[in-house]
Amino acid sequence: MKNSYKFILGKIGEYIACADLLEQGYTACLITNEDSMYDIIVDYKGKIIKIQVKTTNKKPIKESQYYFRLRKTNHSHYSAKEIDIFALVILNKKKVLYVANENLPTNVTVSKYKIPRTKQDLLIDNLTFHSALDKIIK
Image (cartoon, rainbow, N blue to C red; front, top):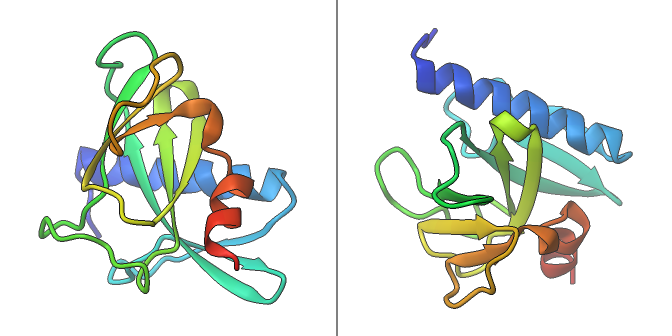
């Protein structure tokens, strides 16, 4: 079993994200297999939604601005077949944001105040699980 600081932070983020989904009324389950591409699955109207959790414990870059790397350990992208949604956990705020895995760059910045200028800039208020679901459920 891994015991590094980053591994433990990641696990805490997974539990926070799963609890957030359960609190919202979704049927969510943590995946404990470390070889899995996804960390949580949600059964949404009979469709399995695969969620990869990314956690940050760093202080904001600027006020309410956080940076996330949306890539695998080997630095490659997650394909839309591997992951449906990313759960972005801001650990020190216990805040979970959700973004559909649609043509995302490997690095994104989320902010409460900034108007997005590029596709890697995302507004916190727009990142709900429901809005991410809307983008992937057709």
